[in-house]
Amino acid sequence: MQQSGTQRPLSRICSATTQLDRGPQTHDTANNAQKVLDEPAGEQASGRYVWTTQWYPVRVAEDLHTDRPNAVKLLGKDLVIWRDAQNQWRCFEDACPHRFAMLSEGRIEADGTLACAYHGWRFDGEGKCTTLPQSFGAAELDNAISNKKSCAVSYPVQVKHHLVWVWPDAGPNNHLEAMAREVPVAPELLDDTKCIYLHPWYMRELPYGFETLLENLVDPSHVPFTHSGIIGDRTSAAIFRMTLNQKATLNGGFAMDLREVQPGASDLVEKGGKNTDSTLHFVPPTLTRYNFGTEELPLILMSYCTPIAPGHSRLLYCLAGERDKVPKKIQRIVDLVPGWAKFVNHFTRGDVLDGDNVFLHGIDRKLNTEEGYTTQKYYTPTTSDLAVRTIRNWLENMASPVPWPSNAPADMHIRDIPREELLNRYHQHTKHCKNCSQALTLFTWAQKVALGGSVLLTALSGSAALADDSHRPLAFGLLAGAVASGLAAAQLSKVCQKFIFVDYVQQDH
Image (cartoon, rainbow, N blue to C red; front, side, top):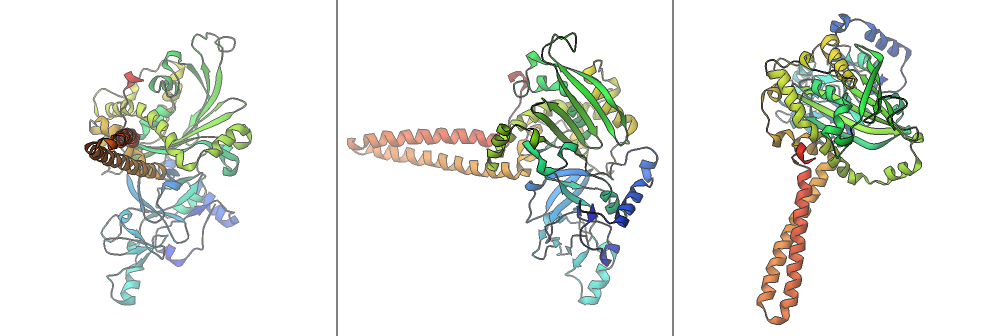
């Protein structure tokens, strides 16, 4: 991976940053990058995890606005992501160096610079201030922008596997460190041209902490109970036998073999009917990966868990496979599904996460605010709990705590959040998803048209009924149309609600 473009003198003024790609490296660049990576630094030298010198996925690339800045949060930091004149994604801290106004409320100008809407300062892709409207003359402008204080704080960013990734470290060697580190991904999917997404990337921001989300992602035994009727059935839930096949390490994570045994199986090999083998991998700091399925259809479930703020996390996940191993019939079905219909798939995935939200927020709140609740008091006696025990050991005994800023809000931990907020699909997903937000706009418009049509047809029906008897058939026809239009409006209203809020009551599932 190398830095795109040439190294300009202004990069000595601003903190090092770059839009990254995975092109060929020069010998010197590769050696320098590896040297930086190999040098002990900070917590890494002391055997503790360095959370800031890692790649984190923050959004699905196609969901980001290209004509305006996008606000995101990562590790408690407010960031802005935007695309410059060269169609390269850039990432800055969401604060103009002038007086810390939010750059995400600014504009992308015709010349590809990012302008602060407060006083009009403009910044190029490397964070260099290029325009300062309040300066008098060229000399004062040059003097002001030659000071490193005029630069926006910027971070390395790249697009990989349809996701936008950010390296949230603004140190002097950040671009070299980022170049030396690949994004964590399933090795089978390294070549995008050879993989197929059976369920494309889905993103949702969740009202509970990063650690609690990670714990849930490595716990498949909850699925048939929490998500019964959507994924699995609580009345015939399988038992997961877990064995560790890769010992947990600080930077390497761990791997486990899973055998899914049907109820009543006492011998894992000879009894119990259909037994299914799969593997679970945790790759720090964000990736959990399941390899499962059959020889005829091997599947990969990739989930990225991103820490946003205390009590607040982001999940991005997809279901994929190697194209040459997926049956042609399934490939044709996947390829035939139109892009505009993606929201239907997102409805189901929303149902799945709704089933978790109330539980996991409650667990997270107890662990962080209520006396007497600690993970050390978990009772996890079965092999199905092995991954939970292992991930908690990695988090609490191997890695250092997530380095939240001292002023990071912790209200998600403290507040007893109402269900309408815990399960709010609009703020957690829809407004961040281009497909779902466009579909909501369309269905809302259609619902208003249907409702207006119902009112209009009702009025016309009444007018026709008041006329002479010859208009009665017309009146009945108009009334039938009004009823049909009203029913359509009611159904469209229910569809719109699926983008906004759907209560999830376990007793009903």
